[in-house]
Image (cartoon, rainbow, N blue to C red; front, side, top):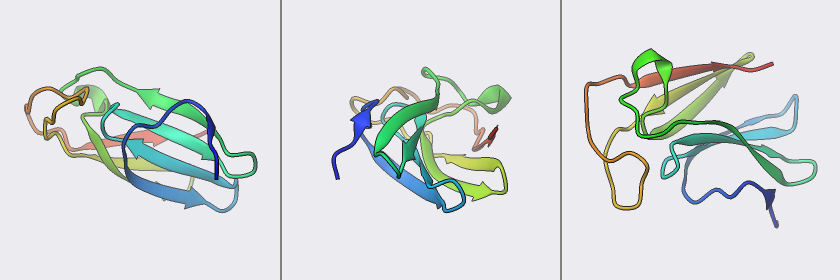
Amino acid sequence: MQLTGDKITCIDGFVIDRATDKAYVTGARQNAIFVINLKDNSVMTLVQNSDTDGTGGKLDQSAEVLLKGKRLYISNYDNPAKHFVNTKSDAPHTESVIDLP
């Protein structure tokens, strides 16, 4: 399957929404959540944060994602690695929540 659109450089977690035929993917390296439209294989960035500490619900090296209704729950790993947006470990803010339209 050839994906088009935004580039995902590191997939850590994903979940499929069968009702919308979309996959939500954590991009740990980019500190982002991506949406893959399974009907046309297009990729778009849903949210992307810079090197944050996770306060205010921002991503802090997003790792796993869970879909419940119209809400995504993201666990943040906060483990710095070479070539990742996340450059340092900081205060533990381990969960982010994103409401979907």
